[in-house]
Image 1 (cartoon, helix red, strand yellow):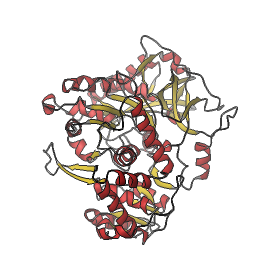
Image 2: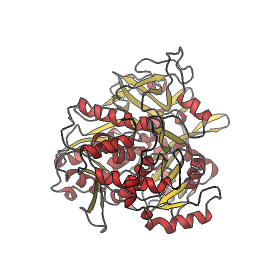
Image 3: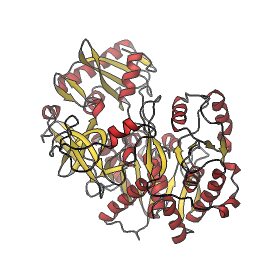
Image 4: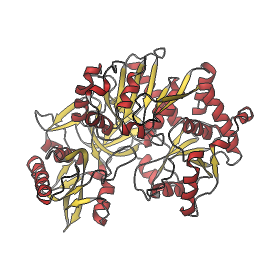
Length: 576
């Protein structure tokens, strides 16, 4: 078995009538249970074969096809249909009729697809978008409704190998210059198997029923792994819902988990756990049993100890085990997961380190200081090192450096970007050890073999020779005043008069914009950061909710925040 196509075909042979992919929709906005549609492994395989035959009339193996589909089972079958045709899938989303489609334009220009895949409901929006889209973007559209199910019998497996590219996963970088990570079949299978090996290491046997529950978008690396790849690799079913269903009613996620009779696994960024603590009232989960929720992986953005503590305390009465919520670390350039703390019995692991030592690049344990959440041990058959980003020398434990990764799930590089590929994916240690590493661009340290991420390398703030980590500063800012919204702060530096200056963006609650109240809030943030970190803040900008740039998974984009601040395009700025 060398490709994800082989994996799904094998599942179809072993368990053709087994539940594979299910999707719950909520036609009524007040509905908590929803309507579930499902596909067996055989039905998924047959739909993928029919789609592949249709697609093969338009595309050749190695061509790209962009998925402009809403969440649902058609997304799954279209994705597999691309793979069954040997076509490289580019998971995206339908264009918007009301918001900017700049990112969609940029990804389509970069990936140069042979065709665009959509559904009946989104065809008018796609057509309207193409009327104004750059001329270089293909106008060839494949409506999934045009696929004849009878074509499935005409399918022939294309020549595919482990190193053939399965998909382009576009990173959450600049909107204008997105980079497509070339994820080979080898990476999808390897990372899926690594996750199952870690399940096995904590006593989850292959014979023990397990269901994945996910609301994550399928165009996101974590959503694609949990919502599509893992069921094909391991044979366990997934129950999906749309991100909007979760955002409108977060309790739907927990109800879906508690509604399964077998043990469950789910994954989400920190903001999802935070949203649950803010929006769910205790009586809304009456009768919901979370005792079978085995793993709730928290990743895709910095994990906050305070968020996870509140989440565990709030839902302990529903039987939530203390070990359920675990932290993980990963990135699209490694397909997904690099490390996770699967083996802990108490959920997340937290180390309190001395703030002054941390500023010097050393993680020294202290009674009080900075709380750093551990992201666990590396996945099997993978090397994870901490390296000096300037000298490329390997660093010992408790020294902060860049995280480097070598393993079978590391991607092949960036699409049509040879220079960036060489810089990121072909790094060598000093002295060399014969391996090429992938530079993650993330800073962190190892302690007892477990990773503790601290910040993005490009986000590091250096003032007076001290290293300041934005997540630490942002936590202080959020705690400075009750009007600052949790998880809604972005801190970065700008250069002014040949010096690094710290700028703080905070989103605040609505209806509190009176100038005297705004001035008090800004002063509180400035004072808290100075008292805690001994650094003066150049400016505090108060913003309305939703103004700070974020990725598709909800992660704060500090570089985009800096750009918007400097060019004056911050949305809904209230005061400066």
